[in-house]
Image 1: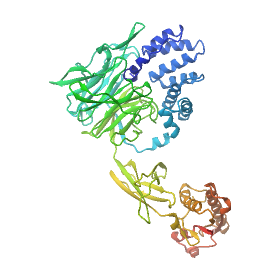
Image 2: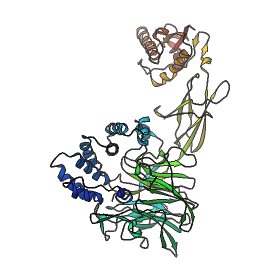
Image 3: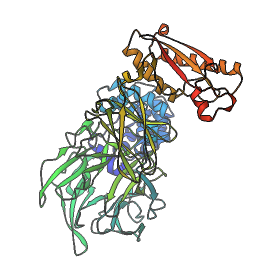
Image 4: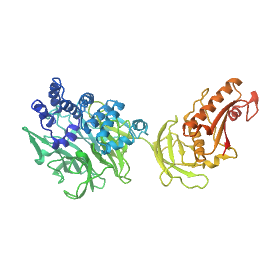
Length: 621
């Protein structure tokens, strides 16, 4: 069972559609009752008779709601041959991403941005449309392992490990239960098992919690004696009745454990008759409850993450929306709060791989949510992340294998690399310096600007060495390394030399410009060094430079002269490409005619390297 059908789709009950016309009346009725499989069959019959953008869109939405990404993308494509609302283009993009078609998804996102430029998701995309390569290469936070207590056929999700090592989860595995008309799977029940060093006992149903409707998922208090769980609003007499069918909402309930059994079940007072409330997480001190809801005040009318203060026995404060740092006009759901105030949640509104991704935000710092990255997140739905600090293990759910399964999230060792950029002469920190981190193959991972205290921090893997390149206006670019570490915080001191220090008499003293063997194109490393010359020339607009490229004595005189001349010209062309007027720089190759070390055929490798150099002569200051 796709959990959106209960845990998320019920949140749309207040937005029930009405029949477009007599032809679509039956299909629309099925859709309004969330019976998407049957609704799709009826819409498909209509689509085969004539072109109808409404039918195409409803077909796409039907498949979207049962997470049939391929069919959803197919019918969104047909629907968008006609003008559509902004959200349709957004959902189409999500389905394309889930199918791995990221360039096509970006095309649809551009249409979404045009129609809804003020939408938080549109603003984020416009700022960083090509974020996926960086997301794929970010430091891995967890390894994953599928749990062996998943049912072979039916859905399992929402796993949470209590402090007493009882593992609670939600499943549709009970084949004796009535089938759910929306997807022909049994209704959801709550189950528990015992966790022991990575293994689980045989799960058993929690009969005192389970009803004839959907039940779960749940969260458990630190002492294991209080449970908040989701169930259907029929228990509270809240539902929408239309066309002879009743549609319920999600409501949140509290239960207490006594003598090993759950009882004293009460509905929380902030449930509503026209909105859903569910998927809760309780703070370690038991004073704050986080939950998902589409109650009034939610952004875009979709599900948001909320919190409420717990003041006593069934006494609560006023629910508070967590705001636009966490919530978007998309769907945010499945919150989980840790003891150190880190909030894990699922979202399809923040930048991800497609569909629902899992994010974490440090609520003490009010930082932007971080995508957990691969392998936890995928192009499919990834959600319901929980963490047990005692066992240092997390759990999450995903339909990446074709149905909702539960996975273990195994934390990886991490290092906080704290880079501090300072002036070599004065020792003062340099704010707004650009710091780029590279992997062991010199591939750029990401770049940050230093804060006012001259620092920026990168979260990287343990047991790996990293390189940092630091740049700042008026300073010499420099490269720094950080050795492999077993974890914790590592300080990297990036000391930059003022560019003025590179001007020595009539020369610009750069590090050697290296080219690949037998090649003359400018490499990334060479460009990094030449940018120092560009900065100096921009700071000194009357300066004129002559580039002299030299080779060592290996190879023929003719070959060395030709190659060094090509490299000199490539160097000049690069500097010109960076905005320096062509009349201010010229270059020439000298081959082996002006050796720095006259050693002939007896040169050592070190002496060859000294002769294989590039000089930057100041012709005019």
